[in-house]
Image (cartoon, rainbow, N blue to C red; front, side, top):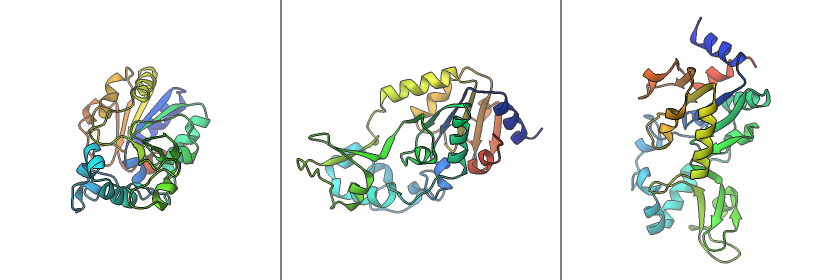
Length: 240
């Protein structure tokens, strides 16, 4: 059997699947990733992206932060691809219990997935730091150099986890719980290089760990099934 056929048979026989994905899930929707040779980390800016997307830079240089954030992090024209759509189908078929994502683009929800744990937050949620009023991504895009609250004038901050900030422990706890109970854990489109998120697979207790990625990862040797390729093509070829 080919790797694709093995994946198909495993999915047919299971109703307890969890998916854990990263930036590679959304690159086929036109959203750049961070660590590939064409990703944001390899483009030239006045400051490195990892510096701009840090909490201290946001506090000290909000104007430059938002210039980068609006240009590179908010992609409202992006549409879900075959991977997003197939995962939503798997959930609707009662097979997939949760999507755990490092992405902040909201494409899983747009495709129809309902149980989505966003480890790094979402560009679609933004809040006033003074009165906590919520704003959507379009408000941020349409705002001035530094988005401010129309209610109290406070600075609006994206509900995304910046470098130097901690992950939401409630979201992490739920992710760990789903992974611990999963029969099949499918990991795709992630370099598995960013912690603590990459450490989530340590909580998997089963024997059907599937890694789908274009490039090698530090966890490849731990996979029960390793598929190198575009995740949209791999998942999109599944019959539900």
